[in-house]
Image (tube, rainbow over all chains, first blue to last red; front, side, top):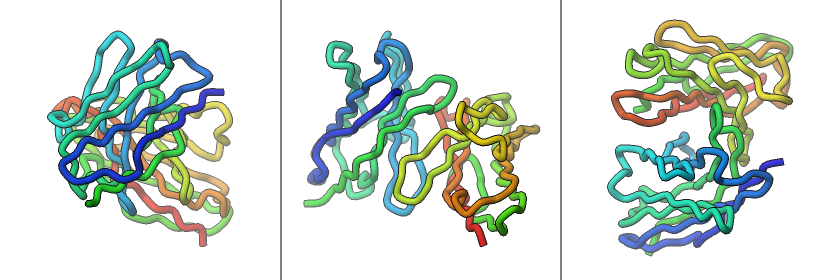
Length: 115
Length: 111
């Protein structure tokens, strides 16, 4: 049973960097692509980016200049960094596994950007 | 404005059949990229419902089915149940954006 769990601060100040970690159990992060998706309150899903353990990555063009996704194979974790955040980045952030599609999702973590 | 267009809402009575549309363009669905569908129950994370246009993951009832034609895709639910009340999202790849795109989502109300 694959499980993903997001962790990180629930409150980030404007202009600072949002940092989240996803801990994976039941699968090795060397086996699949891993992704971050977010959902602003009351709105739809927005793809942030994905990465493969080989280093192959792809990011949403609208966020590319501010986003970094990295993998830590020793801890079986992957992380998200989003810089220069504003209130528009307030959302529930989901980490997920990608095979043929996004087949496993974390429960999500709400990150609020506010001073 | 989402690259993939979904109607905001759909409704149906228990036992009925409902369909959800997902309209794209020549740079995504029309280019042959697969469409996937997700169900998001209130307050929960999305769940994969259909992958590769018409394939059901293990555990998804055969009441759910997907299809694709031209620049559009559809999700159908037969034998509608109260527990199906949720938001449904389509997702594909867009070559113009060089990335994944989601539809805006459709809220299903079971009357």
